[in-house]
Image (cartoon, rainbow, N blue to C red; front, side, top):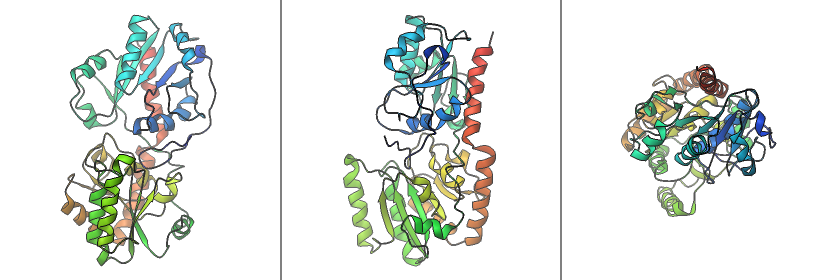
Length: 367
């Protein structure tokens, strides 16, 4: 099974199996079949968490190399786990919170309920009702925390610094994916759609590339059928500008870290985002980022040091900011090193997993 995150396929260390319920202390729920950023987060975290605690996922749409409970094992959750007074039911969506509430209060399962919120909008009354019944709440950013009406812990996402790492040789990395090592590359990765701002990136490149023959733009990510006309319109704009060979749609890629490694600059032009992992992945690969002020981007990027934050949905601002970075090689080099230092000191995936475990332990240790 191929699992794609925001920008491409994300791997997971094999930890497969159907574990014994009595030794599972945390259930990471994933009730959504369709791939999403939430699903990607679970896929990345679970192998690390499985080294720390007995944990298993529950739900569809997950690869076979993760520890997973089968649906027929769910009745086993009504019994206490071995050596602990209760399990943790970790939800990230409304249906998962509701299922946990039903198990705990209707079926009297020995559970404590944890919810992670990435939302940056006011919750509906129904969602607030669900959240109030959680025993602990995690926000993925300070922005998300401000929309919560209950006590919460901010734990920002991390990135796998081994998987997303700089190339030993940039020219060789570029050649390895079939691109021209004589060019510099600026990228925009993620699903191709209006919400992701792919059109803003394309229009920015149409403005900038004619005066910068040493640069090429690449776009990776899936285009679903209902967004095919959007991509077709962008391709028509590119062709009309005579830039079809320098603004390239590469489609969905399984080896997405290899494509980060060819970049000298990354642009995150989203109009809306819950959190947004692509800037972390880019910076972990030593690539500075120009990003719209959506999601958690302003909490990830140090302006002027590892990249730049611009107002969302403003083409002129994106053009100006991107041009400043493309035209200053020394600044790009300094920001590349600063981005690596930032990610490795503050945004490791292992750190995220450890902080979530602290939340679990806080519930187990509470009187």
